[in-house]
Amino acid sequence: MGQLILYIATSLDGYVARSSGEVDWLFTDQDYGYEDFYSSIDRLIMGRNTYEQIQSWGEYPYADKVGFVFSQTLQGDRDENVTFVSSDLVSFVKDLKNQEGKDIWLVGGAAIAKTCLEQHLVDKFILSIHPIILGKGIALFAPPLPTLPLSLESCQAFETGLVQLTYQTYQNHTGLKES
Image 1: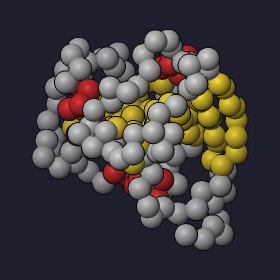
Image 2: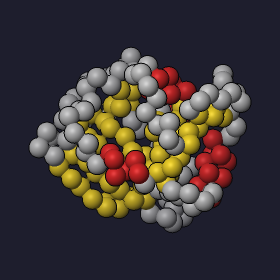
Image 3: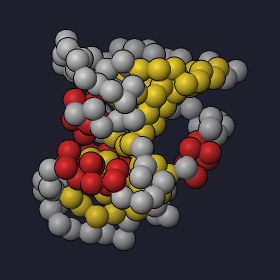
Image 4: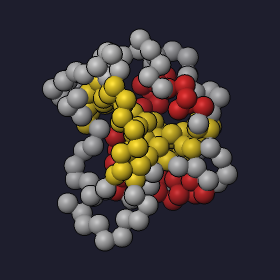
């Protein structure tokens, strides 16, 4: 059984992409722990917009992982990289987490992340905070969201100014009030 991990980069003001979906502001000068993280997963999920953005970069970078893309328009389709899923996200993720395997990467997008957060499906957050203020864009955490207490697992600062925070969710969500 694997954990669902939101491993994502964000600007200091909480945006994962420009309004256009562009991520040209991301640092690519070093690994920032990516290879270790990538070797810890064997499955990944994302939304159709995120998948199309990744496809626009050239060769699909996750071909060695089992990938699922949530889409209402590409129902039941499959390409050489992923299976397109239109079923209930929450049930699908719960089933996926109960299967044997390594951890599962919640790649994005914001709508899928929001649903997973609302349903307390995310087990761990690894946030790479880039030292840039975008001023507008696609928000990492669009309100409203439920209160979700987290426990800091690690914090690493890099010379470039990037800070990577790792949080584990508390497993018992009983009694939490939505804000």
